[in-house]
Image 1 (tube, rainbow, N blue to C red):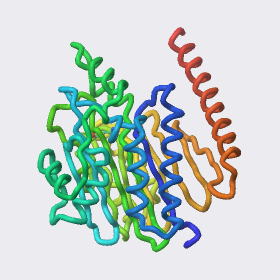
Image 2: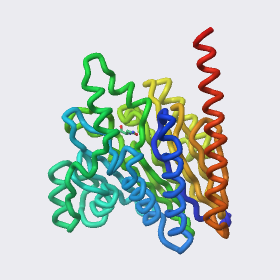
Image 3: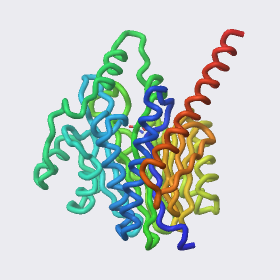
Image 4: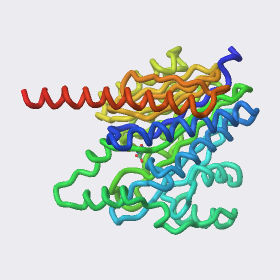
Length: 345
Ligand SMILES: NC(=O)C[C@H](N)C(=O)O
């Protein structure tokens, strides 16, 4: 059993990743999984590893979290983040927080330094100042891509929720460390063109994540309102408690969410023995998992590419990654061509 530990799984958002961003997303989740796993291998805790992985994803403009966050209806950035420690069920979150480069780190400070689980908006900013977390100018969190999508969705007749369902990019991680402790972390800019003050699933315990050493850990991504209605993360762990594997529990919960509220989402899940799953009912979800010196990753349904994690010269790994990118691209072209044919028929 110990050979299965440690393990770390990350996601870069559920949805339909535009072709030009697919390789960027895959490279981003691979890098984050490698970094988090390296910490676990050096004996650090599951909490350290998930925060490290999510911090890297927040700093990567390819994702809807930290720098790269989607904009609210007024063109501003309001972010949500959550961490949870499976040893004690300690948890910390921030919601609708502005001008913070790494909301996941602020969420961890809420867990460690306050009596509360979640701080919101201006109160979260004041807390950040009090504990020495610097404010950053809002423009540094806004990419051209995010601004264009915001502007497009201000047009009459646009449907930001539909558009968001196509291109999500929330980030998250779950891990089990060498001692069998589990943790989760999730971070997001939320939903495209959301109302000011809208808080989604991400900072809500049991919705945007859950971690319990007795059961496992979950980090989801997807339509926040749907995730909240079924408390998706806790629902998956409930099914696991009843004896389901991480993959079966995830599929069952996603199917339930689809039946009840037509929600699209994806999840990464671990159990305390090192079993893991990356599942989604959206078209795609960028994910990567590191375990036993191997890096698994994928984007489309059924994809599971594998790369060695250690004892491998960087150049050789890069070659393999390029081959995978090329084969994914070919598949995408075949898919696009067949869809096109179907449309013409
Ligand atoms: N992209 C996402 O996953 C969005 C996030 N779950 C939210 O609703 O805020």
